[in-house]
Image (cartoon, rainbow, N blue to C red):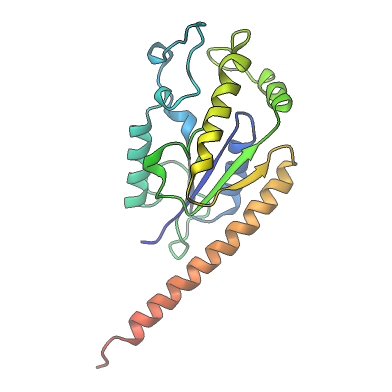
Length: 210
C-alpha cells in the first residue's frame, strides 16, 4: 500500500507540535507520532561537566522504539498508533512524524515524502523556552549551555542532507504556516493519488479479456 510520510522538525519551541496537530485535523487518514514521547527517563540521561542533563541529543531518546512504531505503521498504516483523522480507505494513509531531532537520525533518511524544518531566532527561541514548564525544569544557564549549542550543532549537520528540506520561519503566525504547508501537501497528495489511479488503470487495461 502506498503511504505518505511527513517530517516536521526544527528548533525547540518553533511550533512543530502545533503545526502537526493542525495538519492532522485537516488531512484525511492522518496519524501523528511525536518524538517527545520517546525520551528516556531522567535517571538514564547523561550529564555534562557542568551538570546539565543532555536531553538535546539522540542518545536521550529511545529511537529504536520509535522506529519500531514507524515500521508498525508502515506495515499496517494507521492501525495502532492513536487517533487518525477522517479515515477513509480510498485515501493515501498519511503519517506525520514531529520532533526536534528527526533529520539527524540516519535510519529515517529513506522514509520522508516531505520534510519541513522550523526555525526561529535565538532571542525569540529563548523567550519562548522561558515561558514553558518542563519536567525536570530547566536549570539556570541550561538554554545557553546546552539547548542552543546542540541546536546549532545538529542544524549544521543538516547541511549535508541529500534530500529536499523546506525551511519555515517559525515567527510567522500559526495560520500562515498551516496554510502554506497544507497547500503544498494537498497538491503533492493529489499527484500521488493520480499516479496510483493511473497505475491501476494501466494494470487493468493490460489484463487479458474473457
